[in-house]
Image (cartoon, rainbow, N blue to C red; front, side, top):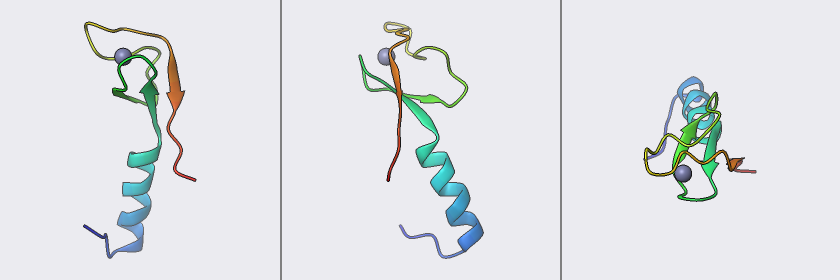
Length: 52
Ligand SMILES: [Zn+2]
């Protein structure tokens, strides 16, 4: 669903891109995460998710 309002699009973009992705289970984690949020994983092997 496209976001019409440019301000909202900026926010949506940052929410979608400013996350860490676990290299082990591919869960998305908050930007301030030090390790994976999944209980079974808890890996510190995270990579930043970047769209461009
Ligand atoms: Zn994980």
